[in-house]
Image (cartoon, one colour):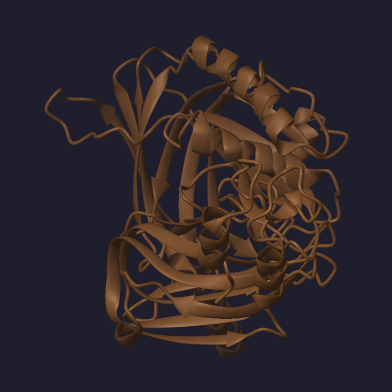
Length: 463
């Protein structure tokens, strides 16, 4: 009898331990949810509700960078992130997720690149020209924006310190018999990975989908609120580049009928760019030595910038770099490695606002209509050593260099120096019909070579 009692006690203790372990397992992913009636004075501030684009891509796909470049051009020039926002699902590469495959199967995507807008539109991709593709994509996005009909508002908040987010969905009408699912996506922006297709910075990469690729069902009546706080797992050092997108989708028609976008960043983006303005398209330069200036807009406590340019010895060499006068030599430490194309600039005081930071001296060797000056690596950090949120206009697929012949390099030796000065002096004073007239030295095209041409050349001699 005692033997049976001991066995029963051991069984009871084992069962209790098992139940406790099961309880811990299910509560480890802490998630609390509730549905309640919305009060007009309730705490509900809608997040931006853009049209959602879902692009399917892979770092092995040679055509994908142009499609992704087109989407960047669209956000920079036509629809900002509060109007149109896209997510990148990677397929068959190191950034791929099982949920991304679920989304591909849901849309029956058969190839990449492929863009689905608002769940229903899948425009054709104009290959290998980001500017042309941006026109086609942009027009398709515009059509979806015009037809946009969201049945709910979404409010998002969260903390990367606690690895949790809160989502509130306020219904504007009864969901009724519609098969509505809520889909959540955690993404990371500017993932630095050099793929076989030449792309180095990957935008809005899908990292985790807490409810899976097809989301979870949601039924609400008009003016009801669904609220949930949920823990999540994401591993990255670039916390300021992580964001959350939650959208509602009719699983029968595939139409997206609600969205919300939330960025965990505590600072606005600092925009880094080359040339006169942050823009897309051509940046003009000439053969021989040029200085490309890296500028920043809307910086907040910028302490250090590190970049590495992908070298192309057929078209250019990196010669040197210098601090811009706005920053001042005494306020920055600049280190350059020409052989690796690396520049590191550290500022004594954090940079704020809009500034010209430093210039890279580049010798271009031949003319080109669309030359890439591509970044392999880019990191910007604040005074605490944390990576700051940024946008960088890489001279790659979004913008490019248009290299023309330097008219002051009259002897074609890829330098504007005393040798060119000698050529001008030898024909100084000559008119167009004179035997020693050299039209290459008539810089202002007034049919004579005089002090004006000489002065112009001296002003453009390389430092």
